[in-house]
Length: 169
Length: 211
Image 1 (cartoon, rainbow over the protein chains, first blue to last red):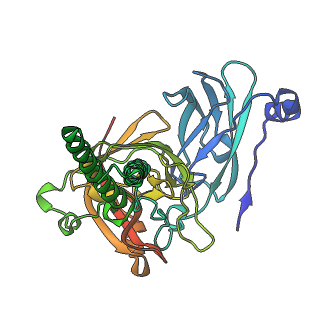
Image 2 (cartoon, each protein chain N blue to C red):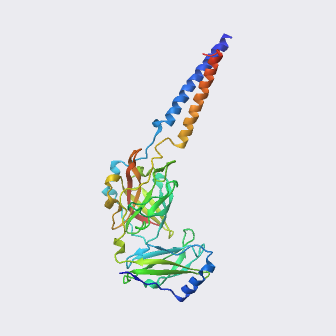
Image 3 (tube, rainbow over the protein chains, first blue to last red):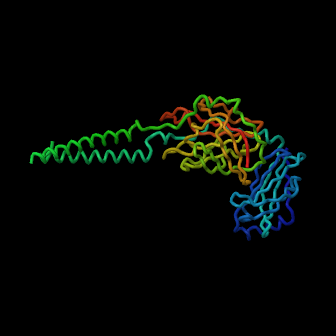
C-alpha cells in the first residue's frame, strides 16, 4: 500500500511554471536518506542558493513543518535537518527549500516506508577492487631497468667495437 | 706505449664490469625479483582486544560523507556514492581514479547507527591505488570521515581481516549493527594472474568521537 502525498503550495506552482526561465542555476534539493522509516531524522542539502546562501525548508508535506538550511563548510552548500513524525504514513513526499536571497526554490522527494531502516538492501559477496597492477614493476622501476639495460648495451657495443679494431682485449 | 696499453686494458676491464653489472640490474629491475604485494593483515589484527575496546560515541545525525582520511597509512581521498551491481555485490569507483574511494549510498551514513560501508581500489593497471596499504592498518588506528554538514566522524579500528571471495561472510561484514560502525574494504588475499585477487581486506571500526 503506497500512498502518494504530494503537497504543492501555490508558490511552488508559480515557481515551477517559471522554472524554465530561471533554469540557469544548478542544483536541486538532495535528501538523505531518501527512504526512511517514520520517526527518522532526515538531512537535506542544496547548492542552489549559492556560496554561503541559507534557505527555508518546508517539510510540511510529511508533517514536519518548516526548518532552516544554514550554509555549511562543505563547498558553501546550505544544509538542514528535520525529523519525520513517528505518525507519518508510508508514501512519497515532496520537500521544498526556498533560498533566503532571490526567489529560487528547489525540491526533492522523500519516501517514507514502514520499517525502512530494517529493509536496507545489504550488498552481497566480495568487492572487485584490484587488478594486480601494483604487482609488476612500477613505472620508476621500469625506467631504471630500461636505463640499466641501455648502459649495458652501450658498454657491450663499445667493447665489441674495440675488439673489432684489434686494439682491445 | 706499454703504459698506455695497460691503461687501455684497465679501462676495458672497467667497462666490461660496468656492462655486466648494468645488464644484471636491468634484468633484475624488469624481472620478477622486484615484485611487491600489497601488505596483508597479521592474524593478531583480527582479534579484538577487550582491554583496548574504546567507548562508542553517540550516533550522529544523518549527513552524507565527503572524504575519508586514515593518517596511519596516509590516505586522504574524496568519497563518491556507490550502488549495487546487478549481481548484488557492491559496485566500485572507476579504476582509473587512483585516489578515490566510495561509500554505499543506500546504506548507513558514516556516523549513524548501523554499518556504513566504504570501498576503494588496492591498485589499478598503473600501480597502487587509494587503499594499497589498508592491510597494514593496526587495531586502534584512527579513521576520519568528513561529512556534508561540515562535521567529522572519528572511528577507531577494531579489527583488520582478510576474507576469501568464495566464502565471504556477508553478515559479519555488511550486517546491521546497534552502534555506529564502519567497514573499509579493498582487494586482498592471494593473487593469481587468471582470477585476480582472491578476496578482500576488511577493516572493522566503530565511532569513538566527532567534531
